[in-house]
Image (cartoon, rainbow over all chains, first blue to last red; front, top):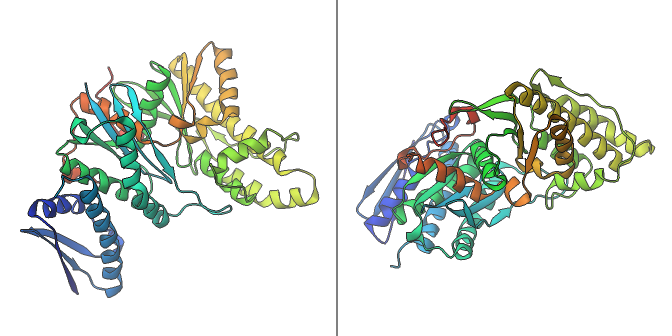
Length: 81
Length: 335
């Protein structure tokens, strides 16, 4: 099964930074989930692929926690918008 | 002039420190403290780091009075440690590196301890005893490598102490090991327990099982007090560590010994090591809890050395790894 998230950022630059931070870590092997990240303009596209719904849910949950941290870091330590 | 910022989050401490050419400008830390009787789990520890990373980073910059543009290099702990907490901390390091357009250096946690110990104490070429909740190693430098002469074959000495503290339901504030140390000072009666040294290596898991099983009965019967057991446990495990450290020093003909890692701030361990060192005509170097216990500055210091010797980690390679041995790193910054 597939699941896709489209995350809009205020600018393409910020979407690229989030992509840079979030695409480094691999998904844990045992979950059998594959995750692909792309940037289109100011949108960060994330595609999850897995056999079980349960494992995708775990991966998306953890991804969102990481995304939140990256967004907060950009907000507090990035250049003023 | 090189300014380095270090991000450390491999266990239950989140630390961010700034170093400018060997001078610690700031080194704030926030510790995840669990209720008595409980250890820290990866998921909750990662959440702790995510919740505190940005306020600790802000404090690090403010205390150091450094602006992001003045920083030359971003250093983070690649491993060894717990996966989820490592990644949460690395995410912040990667993001600020891109925002501030700075290079990144991936640092081995154990090397961070060694380099910080050398910086703070001024030890030139010490035999190192690295003792913490996750690691127990005797290390000596030779030919661009921190070689492991001896290590634990099961659990770390700090893990053994922490888990015994859970049996006694001691507080984890400021750390279980600190509270064991305080009780041990009032211990009078020594209980003999398994002393397991195998060549250059040590083992603590059998000893822990033994005392975990015996402790409740011994205390209930009134034969031994918790103070006696803390004292006996400390004396036994520290004697094991001193034995293998002394053997490594004899092998390397070393005249310096350095204790690093969280357990390294235990005064009794330092005292025992001091006696052994003076008998050999060697010098003991140790640091206090600011630099012994995991902190950001130690990662900045090791990263600072690496960066000056030409090491940079491309963003795509800034991964984390739970297993990362001390001897895997090529020590490019020492002769």
